[in-house]
Image (cartoon, rainbow over all chains, first blue to last red):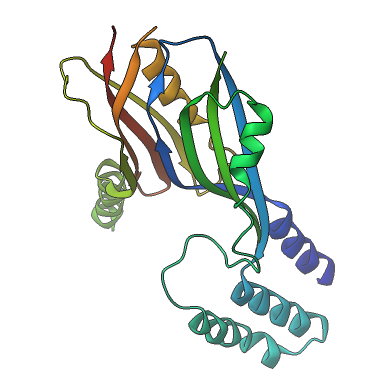
Length: 143
Length: 103
């Protein structure tokens, strides 16, 4: 029974899903030269704390064979969820400046600085309660 | 009893046919004075039961726009990212349009 439960939780955590929140395509100039694709992705790990609380409490309840603890798992998750109410995109991260040097990274890939067709993409990859919150900038370098 | 099952089946089919839409994001770049040559592209993918592993479908919209304006300049680009929800599936769609200017 315990093996099945642990396997179930492990499968939830190991299955990854992608999410697309926002995409913006800017002007594309194909008239001044040959375009080479460039891309920069900044990733920050994040945790859905309410989901972690629910899962871990339920798991402790199963391992200790205590239905009472398992029953309280959802309530604890709801309580933590209420503490993080408000508009947001993706899971909360501990660092809100992880995407700040994206322009420098683009210039490394395109030293001439002649960049066109910028695409700003906000996306994430989730592994159960853990997620990678990604800011991706794709563009074309004009040669 | 048979009619109840038929009603449930019809309800499921009906829910699948009529999708609810959600506009997730929208953006617009500087619109040019010359707006004669509008080009439009669209890219989408289907997500079944919430399982999706990539967002690469959006790149197709950019590629299509580029093909429609070879050696030109695309400005006034309107980008829409929208979703249509069906019973077990979601259609994710990126629609992009812009004005092609060739000198």
